[in-house]
Length: 86
Image (cartoon, rainbow, N blue to C red):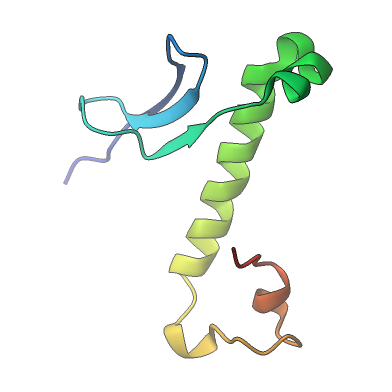
């Protein structure tokens, strides 16, 4: 079994995306910054996007390792407090 390789790239429209390196399909994650946020980040846009993607992958990995019965909607639950529902 071969592992998928991922890459973080900036598209021509300025979005930063996570995609599989060996495919031309839709990006797995797309980040678009507002003009206001870009003015604060200056040249750090790619670094911020990379940190956001890494944090998201870490949480996704934690959730994937958590048995479904341990995922609770109880506000007192530790996992609940780490999630934000939109």
